[in-house]
Amino acid sequence: MSRPSKSPSKLTNRRALAMMGGVAVLYALPCLIAGVLGGRRWLVTVGVVVAITGVAWLLCAHFSREEVLRPVHVRYLREFFPAMAGYVVLIMVSGTWVPRMESVPARVALAALPLLPIALLIRAMVRVLRDQDELERRIDLEAIAIAAMSTAFGFFSFGLLPLADIGWHVGGPTVAIWVMPCLFAIFGIAKPLVARRYRDHE
Image 1 (cartoon, helix red, strand yellow):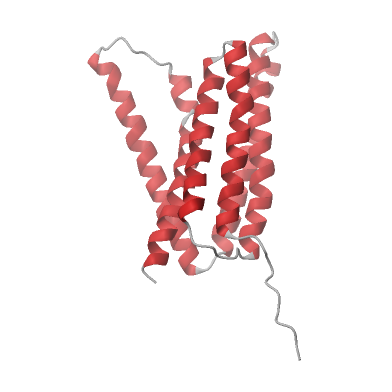
Image 2 (image 1 turned 180 degrees about the vertical axis):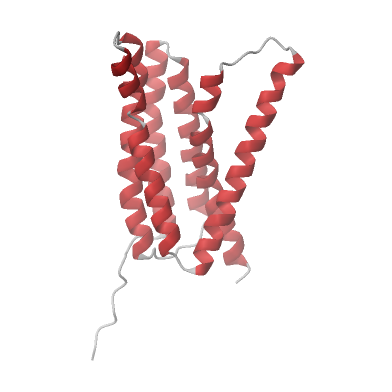
């Protein structure tokens, strides 16, 4: 009697979301601690955004259906976690040491370091989009559209506030640096919600 064929992956979507949520919350802790102890508001903000994203992933994991991940998604997670870990480390290093550097080329090189893991993350996203089936690609593209439009609407609305002269002024670089993290965070929250809607209509 032949044995039943084993699934190529034991990792499920619920477990993956729980892992991503837990890792995000763990990544947020050093940002919050370093930001509070060092008096760096930007690190506190990073920690808050990452923590909110992690909690959202944990909630999505709680309400999602248990489905075994395909190898293409397991590969994506293997590329996602190191890239995000590298980003958190490098953004903290960059934000801490750039103001202390006297050389302009050194400041530029150090400030650009967090771009390396972001480039790897974009590469992983493009690869998984290319290798998914039609339904999975449709879910991702819809989540990307939600994330892009939500981010654009949010930052456009934020840009209109100074016109009201409410005494709240935020520098352009501060606004610009948050566009991509917000885009990724909203995409990460929108994708499991869009996937759940499609699965419920099956």
